[in-house]
Image 1 (tube, rainbow, N blue to C red):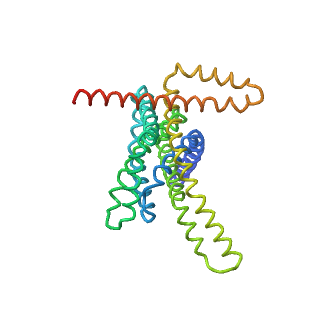
Image 2: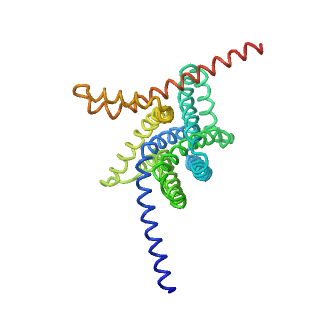
Image 3: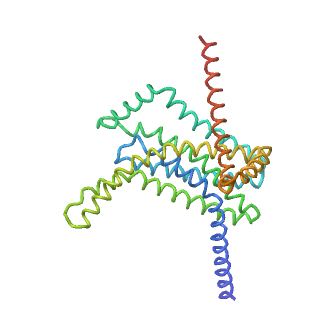
Length: 316
């Protein structure tokens, strides 16, 4: 009897693991788009203003912050889904609005305060070159910002994953969400760590000695990596901002159900455009989300500017 019970238990565990693997695969596919945005945003946020020997410690600090985010978000998502499912969408929309704001505010600040941005850059460069400056103080804001953005992106990933397994038992939901949260955190920040160390890897390869074919190949690869690294960082700076608008706009468009029929309508119209209809139809919802994200970000930023002007006028 004991042997039969043990075999039954092992069989149940095997079936459970098989179900978890299958459900996790489905959930991972659903969240893959957000994961790509997550990678772009976090790599861009951690790509500049950090000394080479501090890059991995900073990524590690954000990784731990991301794990803490997941540790907080997974139980909250499960509890809200069970007791108060109606509040999940408004919370995601608030997070989406914040991402729209953060993306537009970054662009507005860069172009409307060029002198201030240049001064901040020069100050940062001077600090990085000064061995007596405690650079960890400069890192704190960057780490906090990355963890704050990760919190919103993680919330979306977890909610999307939860939506794919909403009809499963609470035990299965806990296992699958925990697996997705851990796997995606390790995956994202593992890739981020690799991205921010591309230039260091290039420098290491460039130091290869010898005139044999392998050494020449190493130096050539090192030079290519050094040339590629700044281009990648510039790309991530743009991609990270666009990702904020895309994610924020997507959360808003999915939250405001009145918008959904119009998105479908525009996608149908796009499908009938001669020659390019097959390409336009799938990207139309993405373009709409981008427009919504950009527009909402602009509205929030300009509203903030006007309110600040009114407050300053009253105080003066």
